[in-house]
Length: 257
Ligand SMILES: Nc1ncnc2c1ncn2[C@@H]1O[C@H](COP(=O)(O)OP(=O)(O)OP(=O)(O)O)[C@@H](O)[C@H]1O
Ligand SMILES: [Mg+2]
Image (cartoon, rainbow, N blue to C red; front, side, top):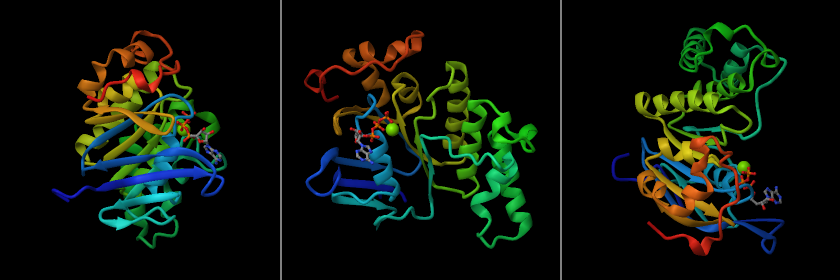
């Protein structure tokens, strides 16, 4: 993929409620290269999940185009993209092992290959000793790991990860991000991450956008974004124990970096 963007969004606008409905996103332009860790940060309702839905191919943009590995997406998630939703998508009636194997049930892969992939995903996410447990027997952080493992068995080249920190204690969030960073580094999986917890999301990112009201109000390397005073005021307090979920100041106060 060298030289070519793995994901590209061009002038993407997404409205809810038809062409004249509420504009939740855009216009947004975005390019992710293979192996990159791209973070989208911003307050609740700023359009992060909408952006991820469009980038995944789940939602068709009202206008503009979305491409993955050169192919235009039109309402279907292509092979190669894994999505970990904001909501807990684990299935309570299945064990951890069966949750993780679920996406491969119609793959036609030989049994041994399925078993190897499931073992690998469960192992990578540190779930081996919980393989026989059911989601209700696990902590929120462990369930989040199950959801990532469910995607991992499909061998995605890009994972879209929506607010993995939600509802989790800071220590658990760190553990999950360490695993995600290892996936990025060791397995070469690209990430598009949406987070309100900007402090953590930017720490692992190669590049980031700050979204407000559906628009990109600041962008740059994590290092540069971390230097923005308004971002530090609004978000990076999370690193010092504050919630990190206060509303961002008005967009006009941002500088492009
Ligand atoms: N299905 C929908 N129908 C109508 N409006 C929607 C729908 N989904 C989202 N919205 C609206 O679009 C805007 C962006 O929502 P979105 O879920 O993308 O934000 P978000 O940044 O992911 O928020 P959060 O951090 O709370 O998850 C919000 O104003 C939201 O109310
Ligand atoms: Mg969201």
